[in-house]
Length: 216
Ligand SMILES: Cc1cc2nc3c(=O)[nH]c(=O)nc-3n(C[C@H](O)[C@H](O)[C@H](O)COP(=O)(O)O)c2cc1C
View (tube, protein in one colour):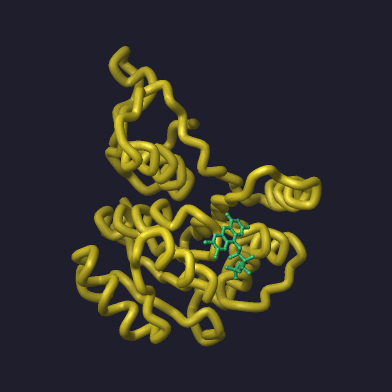
């Protein structure tokens, strides 16, 4: 089902780059075609949090990240965040779904305001106008009234707001399990199958982990 699915993925400069990288890994493992763009601030956070240099040159970034995650040929394309020729910049050729993970309050505000000032913001704007799934993983604490109003505005416009707020009811033993809890909820919203962690009620006859449709 996901083989033909194209996912636009944006990394912005909020804390939580492990979520974004794990999401990229899982999308490629599910054989999705992934279009990736990241902001300058995301490059700084990737270095800070994951000791990972995200190359400035899209071609080099595609090569490095495809090798890192064992992506099949052509499944990953990295675009510059100012590349208006990218397919995701137009409603005539949008992705099937988009996630911004992690998502800054700045990007959230810009998308809520319809600015479309870079590829990530424009692609998100396209998803909303074309009524396709847009998943935002916003990270800040505490949240101001401005942040909350922007989230409400975006939720009303059709976006899924998926804060990185892992549950503890499965007794996570590692940071990786906490990361996977959040990434699983994002994959569910993107309708990409995964087997990250148990699903509530599966042992009692509920759906198993191969579908991507259960709520949090
Ligand atoms: C290490 C680090 C962590 C940051 N964490 C957050 C965060 O959690 N949430 C947030 O909204 N901004 C955070 N910022 C600030 C944003 O990176 C900054 O507002 C930036 O201009 C956002 O640009 P972008 O939306 O284009 O990525 C962080 C910055 C750094 C360097």
